[in-house]
Image (cartoon, rainbow, N blue to C red):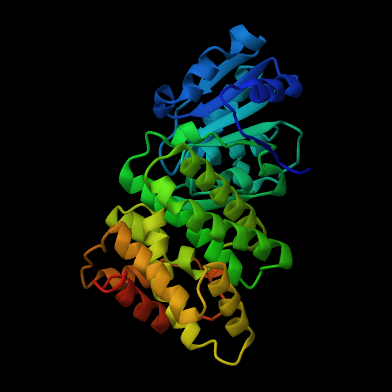
Length: 368
């Protein structure tokens, strides 16, 4: 079933209509405290008075949610007699919302991660408050179980509706505004060159990349049109990675976020800035060369070197910086990479390659 995109135009009548159509008497709202600063906070505060649908709130999760927190959300869904779910926030809120949908009918006395997912018809609305993760368009969720990151993936986790509300981006701090946009751009780039890319996914990637460049200035200035355009770009990029998946850029970035405390999109962009020329050097005469030329065209550049330079010029403009590495960090980094994600990369990477790339990523020239 195709995802329904809801774009509020000064009111929430379309969202009200979607909620009524679910037939739910109660709705589980998965959200963080920041919803109070958003127009959506007032919307859900008055939902019951307006539609008769009761709101059961769940905010008991942290960034990078724990498995136990997702289970407690399922318990809240059941206890509230909920028939629908709305996840409002960044990727973590959507991770929890997706787990509720996937685990709603499982045996909670046993680890849900070990049980077979049985698809259900529970409606799930995703409302992103950043323009980056594209999680509102994907089947993927992440929870931490016994200290280890666990990916949850099932087609039925794709939200049945996505609310793209540009007012939700108005209070984004500058650093997170920049880094989330870079996440969307990296999704578009990586899904373009992924070995799993299809004609459909590349068309989505191309549209996402072009939309990022088109709306970049307005988005960085916080204009309504810029915010709306970047939400569309992130959604397109999310749809692309749902089909093609990410590659080494994302596989290599996760440990950077935990080791140095940088935002995910910032870390992904540093990785892509080193990975792109590395692959271009090894693409001559092969099918990847044509892919990278097509990617350059999507970036609005005439050549592959010019597209790489354009990406690095953007990083220079955003001035996000490069973490300071200690000598022992490189061993930690190169052994942290998920080999499954590396399989999507069009150029195979060995341990020595990753060591070289991490040294480039963490050099002061990484974004130049």
